[in-house]
Length: 155
Image (cartoon, rainbow, N blue to C red):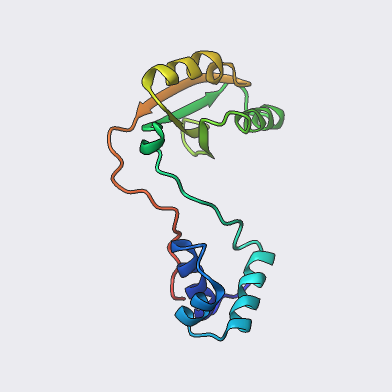
């Protein structure tokens, strides 16, 4: 789908405030209400806008420990990869899972309350994920940048 300047501006504004009214959105991007609404609906139908969510402050919810885990699998056949990827879906502390290039197979991001909670998660769930050969954990000391906004280019 080709995006024009209005589509791109709609996406930029919605990334900053998904609860903005259609009237305010249309005014901000320079369109009348109905064409703006149609564009948003088209962006949703095309799968460019996936969903609208509320972002939470993890520290205020006592979820201040972020752990990045490199995972190496024993096997790399299709079933092993699928089994691993399906299993990570059910562990709510895993907030991101990426396949990676290089020596490691996956990178996980886990958010928990404490190091003790991470140790428990590691012993009870992570080491029991299908086909896991090796896990390497790195604790984040400080979050320097955190954004969900994608860099929408002008063209």
